Amino acid sequence: MSDSESNASAGVSGGVATNGAPNDVAVDIRHVIKRFHTDRGEDVTALNDINFGIRRHDFITVVGRSGCGKTTLLNMLAGFEKPTEGEILIGGEKIAGPSPKRGVVFQKPQLYPWLNVQRNVEFGMKVQGVDASTRARTAKEYLHIVGLADAADRKPYELSGGMQQRAQIARVLAADPDIVLMDEPFGALDALTRENLQVELRRIWQEKRKTVFFITHSVDEAIFLGTRVIVLSSHPGTVLMDIPVDIPRDPEHPEDIEAVRATREYRDLVTRVDAAIHQ
Ligand SMILES: Nc1ncnc2c1ncn2[C@@H]1O[C@H](COP(=O)(O)OP(=O)(O)O)[C@@H](O)[C@H]1O
Ligand SMILES: [Mg+2]
Image 1: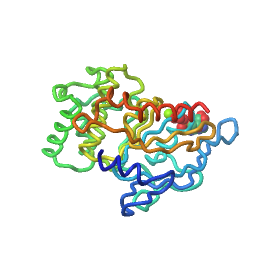
Image 2 (image 1 turned 135 degrees about the vertical axis):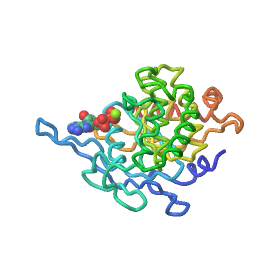
Image 3 (image 1 turned 45 degrees about the vertical axis):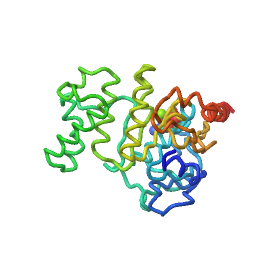
Image 4 (image 1 turned 90 degrees about the horizontal axis):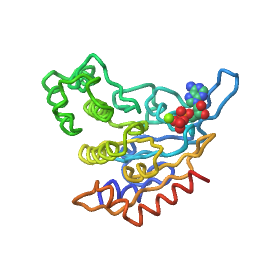
């Protein structure tokens, strides 16, 4: 079992971290309420009393039905939206707006169509003032990690959907964010491409020791990827369940999806999460 997996089961239980140094806490979401004022003059409560902590190297997966407020929560973590009530702290400071420290992977790959893949991956580093040779080297490393080393010279329109999504992931990771926020990034992909990217993402998370906040529709994906699964209820979104994923993994092949699915722990978790979503 990895450090993070043992920490996940010992530490955070629906609130702030209870062990480790304070700087173990990457994000602290405190009693967050988000209301929207609609064009028809109504107030809609999208999220109500969201309250949990994210620790460094957590891989948080969030599942819930469409419209339950998943993207709204991600938008607040990214700094695109502000809570109506409550606060979200990062390193003890309220989120003031978007920051390169929080990289966002959208469901639809966001690439600059006029730049080749290499330049797309270098873009965030360029904005941050990273020198040209470091940019080129880092971009190459991440393109290799996501399996796109041979596609560096291609333009986005020359790539399949899965390859575009790989390029987007390389682009976000190469900018070295502290936290990677992902909004149903594999939702539009075919099953095989999706499984390949799940395996790669989990490997990258482990190797680069990133903190990941990952939204999905899929209970299977949430449990395979996450160190902790958060289940949201609908209308308004509240935290129904916040549970560590404690599945024994083969140390030689921790990303073997079939082996994970074959465990009793995996099946028990699927049953519990499904029951929570459908209650
Ligand atoms: N800008 C907005 N104005 C009004 N209502 C919104 C806005 N954004 C989201 N909502 C509402 O908030 C709820 C949650 O939306 P969203 O976060 O997109 O859900 P999810 O990502 O889980 O599908 C929905 O009822 C949606 O209609
Ligand atoms: Mg959404």
